[in-house]
Image (cartoon, rainbow, N blue to C red; front, side, top):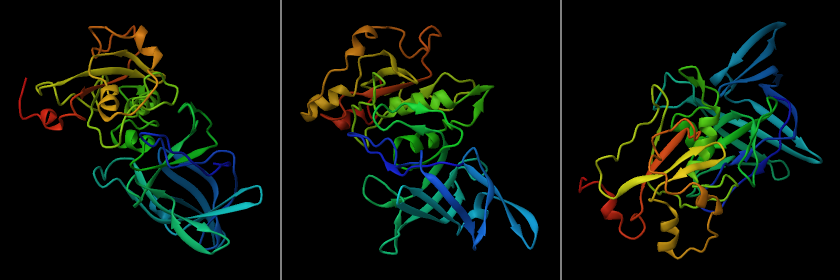
Length: 301
């Protein structure tokens, strides 16, 4: 990692991410005043070398608790303090690391959390390689850049759902599955960064991987059906259960996604026909906004 920018991103409907690091100069990472060198991001875990009493020592993972990362942009200086680093408690044998990070107001000398959830409560970040455009949601591949993806926002949610962009399943990279997940989670049908959803909306996510990371859970539930199949650039086909109806029911104005005209009325949507390029799909109950009780599964199909 050799560059960064602190750039908070929040999109209407559902947050893409908390803090994006891209283009800001790193001016040192230290533990107890000792400089870290050879810093690398392996999956979501940092590794580095520090010299102790003349001897190089490898550090990684939770060895970096208490370390300070200094970033500069022009005349502005940001200091990040790594207060805690731990593996995802739901999968302690996995490879997803959570970071409790505080950022310093250099002028005031005070510290506050780097990440907050949608309720305004402090939360952790997950370190992910590359960076995402704040307008379009596109992933920009750059091995020198790290994004601290705040939990409760889309980039981190997709990691926690199992679509870790650094990982593989059956020899298949999950990088594009993660990107497709960011489109799905925000109902970004046309892949242009425009969301069509609310926080807390239930969706049933599944994929065509072997073995699958997520399998459909609502096949026997009344009022649920296919919303769409998704690729890295948005939906590749749509069904008749769309989150647009939720916006209609709530009286929220929006511009109809023009890309839907060409991908509507495909009866096999959700079957992952190889010609479409869909990687993930979701099921949705379009009565969620008007009658959420009818979506709770108490009345099977």
